[in-house]
Length: 214
Image (tube, rainbow, N blue to C red; front, side, top):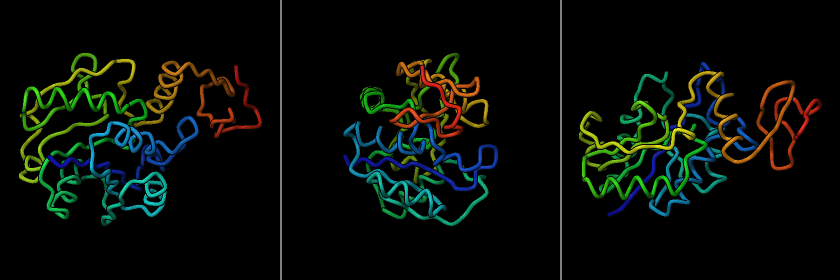
């Protein structure tokens, strides 16, 4: 079965401007999603669907295929975005939608989810966090289900480690995600009283002149 990952990455984020390529611990945040997809070994192709040339440039640097779509206001759901890609490619097989802001997603999690999906065989599999919350990471299913518009209500569930589950929508979510990531990976970077992203050399991307690394 051919498999594809689709990463929707719109350029016009309002609540967090430039969200999908904003630096998160030193890398554009979408890069974590691209890497997780490739690291899983599940996919024949990893496609970033975007209306932004800046996002397209970043995606191309990390070996993702770029699907340039027309600008939209964010009203289209991720299923519709994936359907556009799958229809254009006439894809049959498995599709996994991975959110562009899922820095704690790993290839191993995707592999475990895929195994669970194959075992229970629903049209889709969706991850859930604590109290069945949406962790804002990914979901997967049959390409035919996406193309036919089968609703996500007909889906199996896959439990996610709550230490990695956060849906990043506003600035406070972003800061909490940075804190969670730092805690998960043993990174302690304090700057101006807040935890900030840092590149591989330990330089804070937001205020490097006042950075203190502990």
